[in-house]
Image 1 (tube, rainbow, N blue to C red):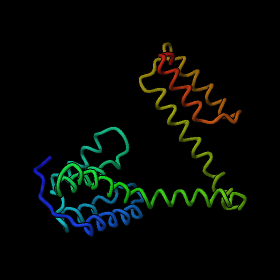
Image 2 (image 1 turned 45 degrees about the vertical axis):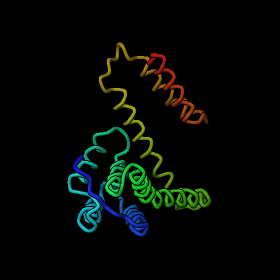
Image 3 (image 1 turned 135 degrees about the horizontal axis):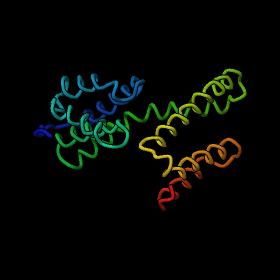
Image 4 (image 1 turned 45 degrees about the horizontal axis):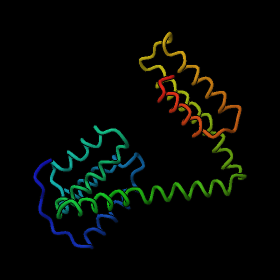
Length: 194
């Protein structure tokens, strides 16, 4: 990364950063990456808390790293904190930005799920769930197909296909929780059986 800036941030600056990310969370319908232009305006243009290079590098590293791409938000916060004083403020910056970007969307998801569960007998809620069921099943099947067929050799990988078929039937015909099946698949993979 480029040379760090030397900032002096007060508590109201940290609160402003947190509030900015709270607002961005509500605007990030396409994911946090869809709000990068506003993050740039705020962090680089308006407050000069990040250099252009730090901003670009935060996004590039997070996109190249495995895991959720929202990690660029933590890297931006980390860089703001490093510019403001060092490792401890870097951790504070990462926490402030990540908590800010995650709190509203997580809260809204939780409240919507609770409302949907409480009102599960309403015709609109039932229709929504019934309409989403084939979409979710289709996405799961397509994901399974892509994962299973990538570099697959049917002569060698028949146990994998057998596990996929068995798992599909178990999910369809029983009430066994999906996490148990995921754990069983992980164990089979760990022992090299699939």
